Length: 109
Length: 114
Image (cartoon, rainbow over all chains, first blue to last red; front, side, top):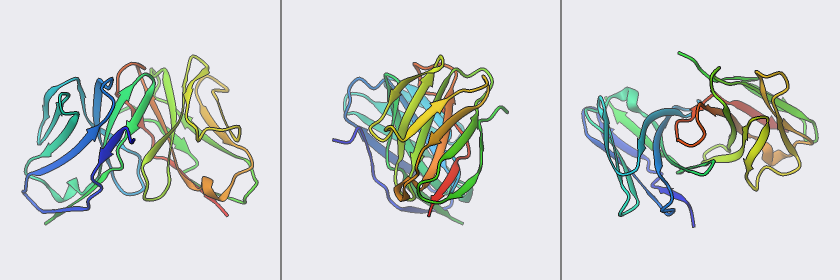
């Protein structure tokens, strides 16, 4: 059983659209949840970081965690072509991070 | 803004050769990690390192791999006797605290084994 599961996409949206990216996880011990953005052939860049359940907003980005359903979401408002990247969800417990496979997003101008 | 730096950015080696990948962590970070990403696949955990010793390692991190912090600044990953399947991007990551989730990645070192 995979610790973190993520639909790989690809996802293609027009500029200005609201994007919803989702992951599920299996380990109820997970407390910390992250979203990373990865441009082609670059290292993952920490985008959002949340602890336990709830919402966190940063500009056009909102991260949402529902621990009861083990569901992690990232919403991007007013999407821009520069948001085109692969988005990785991740969770952490103990001393290990577990990553999803990543969702490839293309925002079309 | 502080960043994790990695060298080399790309290394091509022959099968069976030894490779050393280097990382300079963010200066006040104490927890260090190596991850691997085979082209088109997910980011995979290799090893975590704290207080000059390995904290955890994955099944991938077998006797072929080793890590050390030789001079208090660099954090290295050594791959002995490389195999074709070792071809991947290797990412160093660091965090200030080990019991949270804020992990900062370097740009990666692309290893190609021929």
